[in-house]
Image (cartoon, rainbow, N blue to C red; front, side, top):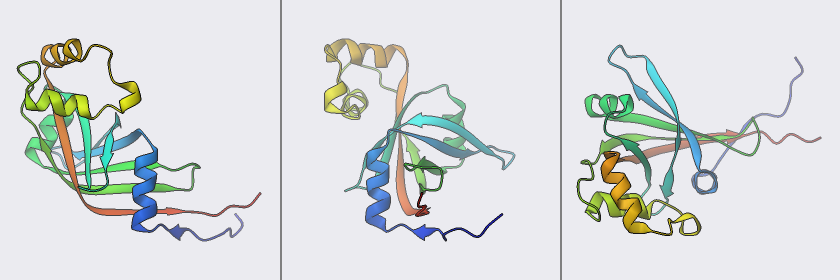
Length: 152
């Protein structure tokens, strides 16, 4: 294998922009055995509060893992296979949304980009209750990642 360009460490701003520019990433939680559990998740990034939010149902294994061990990481690919960002931190799991329009339901609705918001928010909120949805909030303590500048 030939020696190519070295990876370039991305600035905090570049990492935040990479997170903001994507919607999907791989969430890593820890099983009781200590092995990682990986799952592809849609997420919402708030750069001001440095919180990544995920919507999931209360019965998912990732929720069980996070309640036992809140340490988690989100891996987000960049525009090519050589660039990525990782957001590490402690996660908290909200209570289950139990009434349409409660605080958790409103948070779930707010996570959806404006252009993709449901036409009937009331129906959306009812569905979230029926699905027993929760919000996972990953409070990011560390961002890291790299890019490789490959020229054609």
